[in-house]
Length: 403
Ligand code: HEM
View (cartoon, rainbow, N blue to C red):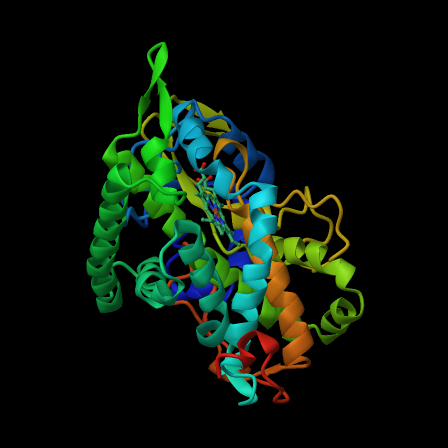
């Protein structure tokens, strides 16, 4: 029976999906809640994600089992409201906004690498992958950069530990504090407007009747929490997965060093190959046939983006990494009304980290026996530890003046 929170699944999710796709592409599992459907074919997943009337994102947590009692927006709403929420925060994520962020992303990456470059060893997750998205997230919401561990570590723990783990219970308590901080920030901006996200949310409107209305305070908090949540464990996992894979494929790593123009394609391909977000659920609004099965009103359906990305009906040699793959219509960022709003930003973060890692950590080697997957890979597929060694190098100019 499909259970994406087990150690067996974490050991080889792609094998589990291959088996499902071949034997039972519309499978039913009773592992959690009242049971749920798992889709593993690209075409089925794409179709459901595009049909938001039948396959709704509204009605609860999109994780299986439902874990987060707090709502996140726009991800837990349907169009047209979801689209209106997206519009409010879109200015943060446009191509030009991301371009403007790039120098800071480069600086975050350099100063993070500076912390360990002279040692000749590091943990690619704890020492590198966590800090860069952490600082980017702080910059997005306009909170002090140095606060990143207070926000990012609870989000990471909440997203990667199983529901009953003590780490997760502790993280849930800290998250309540972060939610309160988001609320205080929004309340403050209602009287002292600025240019940050909280101010953007205070000014934000959504259609209402024949006109429009302001966001409620709860809606604003739910959107701010999504901005905080969206780019953390996803991007952390993606950085770790990418650096780990490249260490096992030295020819590709050397090629990317020699031909940096291949890096954007390689980033997309590595997101396809090991999708950080395994899948999200939808709530069925009308009895509908998928393949040879009928899913009923009220059922929950797991759209396994990670499985779609290995479907041989769409990707030639899906288990092989090919940076030149084109087109590469992978679903690591989802598809349709909820396609990841941070996709451009995430790809720039990954590109910058990859370029700097290739330039500064060179032919790093990983101690594979000490690599650990995240405690549960069912939601975010990533590694908790990737210890690595490399030839020590000098600190960058980014931090010379603060030594
Ligand atoms: C490699 C990194 C990332 C991956 C793999 C990823 C993946 C995803 C996926 C699969 C969805 C679709 C949800 C659905 O259809 O139900 C999504 C939505 C979203 N992501 Fe990302 N994401 C990443 C980075 C980011 C970043 C950096 C941000 C910035 C804050 C972000 C913010 C969001 C938001 C706000 C949504 C909700 C969009 C909506 O509901 O309209 N993500 N992401």
